[in-house]
Image (cartoon, rainbow, N blue to C red; front, side, top):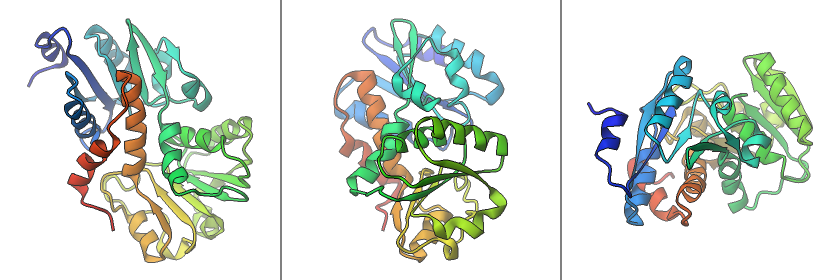
Length: 291
């Protein structure tokens, strides 16, 4: 099997290499999405997956520097830890405290957070009114930081509750949201079934569902007229999505955020408008149209 250095030796001078780093990484559909965009626009580039275990992040980033990678995406579990290994941070990364996109600018690694943009776009397309909205976020990792940051730009939100297994990490995210002007609080996960019916928007910002796990939120604890936002995109029908469908809640699928954040990253790297329709179709060809 060829390594990253072997691939770079075969590249033409105009050829650019991109990747996504994380662990696990085999589930990622980002290569499929970005390669379809490169092909559609006839851009001489390719995008691969690169597994970097949690305790090997520093050496992994050094490898990417050595091969002069053009850019890369960052997923679980590196979105926060990656920041210490970058040279510069965009305002989106500074404000969110997490990075999911990196651009190589003449040898300098610049970090961005396109999740901030990608999370909100499906909500804006549905013309969601945030006035007096109560929001529940499951998780306190890098994705949750981006989501809280994205919500901080909206007016009229009543309350944002962070629910996480680790109280310390949950309280850190509460502090982050509070600094951004949101009314945030932390709730222990043991209280989950007692509170979910109080929320207008429920966001799963964890990896629960990635391995077909049962969601901690059953159908009877989802309000009929609420919005359920799943950030896990594979499988498309997670247990949380299926539970939400049972009560006819409004659903936002994980692939929607994936496409929007990916399109933003594509535009940062290439300076060209992303072919969103093509990127979306590349994913739905795997999933099938959601119903």
